View 1: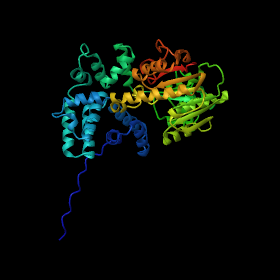
View 2 (view 1 turned 180 degrees about the horizontal axis):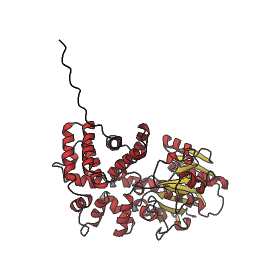
View 3 (view 1 turned 135 degrees about the horizontal axis):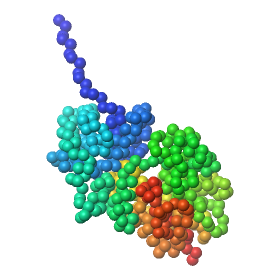
View 4 (view 1 turned 180 degrees about the vertical axis):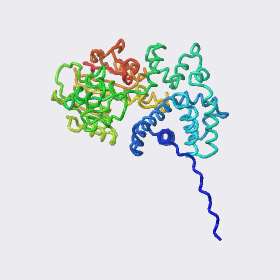
Length: 457
């Protein structure tokens, strides 16, 4: 007698590729401490995602990470236990669903049902029910109404209010405010700009492609400040032929301005030996190499980590740049122009690194400022009299910028030059003598630049 056949198992709906990709990015950031801007492009290539799916996955992953603090405050109001006691996968799902509900045009029913379907795939029935229940609570208010619930009153806590409304940790909002000399209106504008999807910036490599040719090749627009810059509203920069073949590179316009400023400041005496003291991953070294060649100068690019030195070597292929694996604090010689693009908190590039605002902590600052001082001291030591040092960090944090520079002037007798003169035509760069760029003023990362000459004593 033939046994009765079993009915086929019912399978739930498969989650759409974009949401699954976004979830996998959030999971990699949480579980492996990965960087979203490194994980996502490879994941999209591996899964052959492009067009709308790739754009939606990017928006969901980066947007959810940027808004994490605000989303967590809202979710905490909808969960009957401390949010950090939930399983990490459930927290990622809740954030992903809440972001769709509050910050996209996805219809509420679709945001909830699609996230629940995803939960059934990556967890199980119990967590999926929790996700469904919590997201339905989130959906009873829109984003503005939720912000009124979870945001501290501006009148009594302006920094806390701005931080919550613009998805930043409080300490970072305070750092922005300190750099902007306590101007709360400017602080709000800076945080708001930092919370937007940034444009893609390209740099035309000198001697290899003109900016006009890069505009035509990429379909972008000329950048307003750097003579090498082209800006794109979006898309994959690797699709641009000039980027693929090395005639152009992806580089924020603020970073371009730093390299151009160092190369352009007048100096007295020889001008043949240039040094990039912290060269990895090689963008500024490549731009300096392109500028040095026609002037019969050569660049020494120093990077202590071998894998990053390999990236520098690849970036400067064919240019008059020697790559050296070494600690910049131990370099000897006598150089005419020296760049110290020092390791820093990266608070100026948070819009491009959406997970970094939650990864960095105030406790990171002292060790970084100590390293910055050591590198700048070394740079001044190897700069010949009459030469120039450019000190740059991608951060507006006062401890990493003005305090470090003032300390070098006091302790080493370095002389500050007016860096504003090295950025002709760039508007609203402050009272000097240093320059602080901002996303809300310049559309760049928040790069800081100071120019110094060593003591003649």
